[in-house]
Amino acid sequence: MSLSSGMTLAASASIIASAAAAARCTGAMASFSICAIPAVLKGGASSDVMLKQWWTIYHHGKVVPITALIAALSYGAVSYNQHTKTSPRWRGFALAAAFTVAAIPFTIAFIGPTNSELSAGAHAEARTMSDKRVRSLITKWMNLNYIRLSLPLTGAIVGLWTLLS
Image 1 (cartoon, one colour):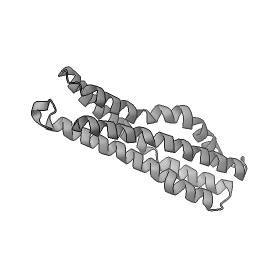
Image 2 (image 1 turned 90 degrees about the horizontal axis):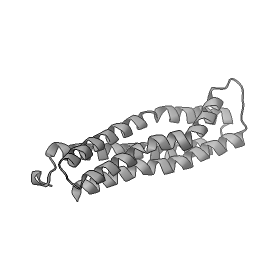
Image 3 (image 1 turned 135 degrees about the vertical axis):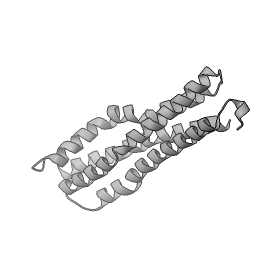
């Protein structure tokens, strides 16, 4: 990686920081599905308690999309910079940006309805869902989250691969 290859030190640092941010998103999301949600499901708690625990996890995860968006914007800026220099690398950085930010529309389209139902249950004054339904929704959320976490991870891999190629 030299300056003569068309990548400045600042652009390279930006890509490394973007990859680190995308990997952080992946790690945060993975910790929810690997550690936190299984603990909620195996604890033997009532649906009311499981919903409150899920809400706490969900609330802490709200920072993840912001991190993904910042990483994607950084990839996009470097992609644009490389495109104006007619470097073929711009496509890889654009792809990294697309994968990283794709977690946001994926969440809205596929996880959003589950989030809405779980949130309504968590904020209900009286019990509105059976334990079986709550477990089913939380398990669905966990499984969709596994898919979602693969998006910024792929963005980080593509970004670093493009930088090092």
